[in-house]
Length: 364
Image 1 (cartoon, rainbow, N blue to C red):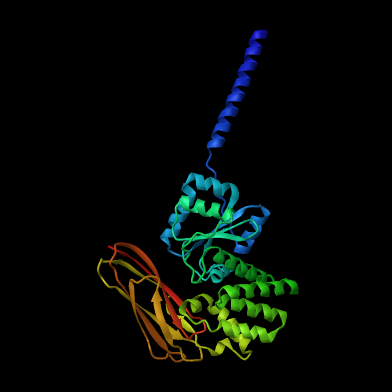
Image 2: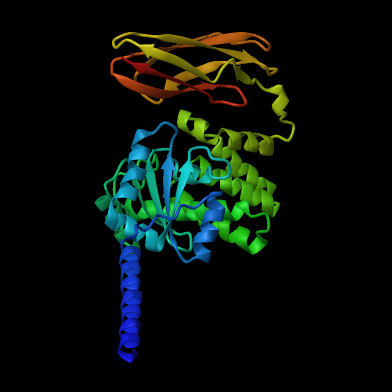
């Protein structure tokens, strides 16, 4: 009886050890998951600092297949996924997401997909553009961690590359984030002005001049605020107007306190998207959008273009008077099979330029 009890006890112990071993085995085989962060970019920076994690930001545009492929690459390559799971938060930043615009504004780029790598203190250390393999992303992370220069070929309109682009980006991003904080004191604002002047020596463009104007406005130096506001307004290329139009309106009021938004031209589209449904390959389907001037000054459509060279446009060239309507016609060149989704931008003298609409369909 005694021996039987001992044998039972040993069997129970073996069973417990076996169960523990099996549990340990399966837990070690469980896939680690990438931790995605949510909220605004500022809240994600705060979370990364609190958790002492680095941050990988994926900049995405709507309907971007390469962006979807990139996310799949992150999630399905075990070595990279393990790295991200252990050390990183991953954040998907959509184009024009409210509160997150300063990332593309600071780096003067809306290329997608793009990857921005930040350390736990919110310092930009590296970036890539376009679809990248897991090995390329891993290398960019390692280069950044070892303080090596940025991987080349980043699609920015800034005439900078390598370490200069990273340093410039950090100066402007840090300045933009300081200005977002309404509690910034005079010492912080003066340091921000110094940082922005350093950035001006590297490259002058709309955004760093705009930020300097806002800094001096906060400091109560109206003369310098107007000086940099006027300089910012000299950047009138289409991309600057597209990316910075809401900020341009702020500066117009800073330069002239009599400026009234209600007195300007204002463009209103009759629809924001059009579905061509199924079209035959080789066809040239057309869609017409009406644009009404609901403002008080004549509306002049200056330029229309799309995010690919697969479209042709015609539009009302004469001024559209207040209350009247013009038209934008888009012709899609259906030369490739498959689904499509394209964006069209209408640049004008309207307060709300550019107006944006989209087209989609399937080519059979």
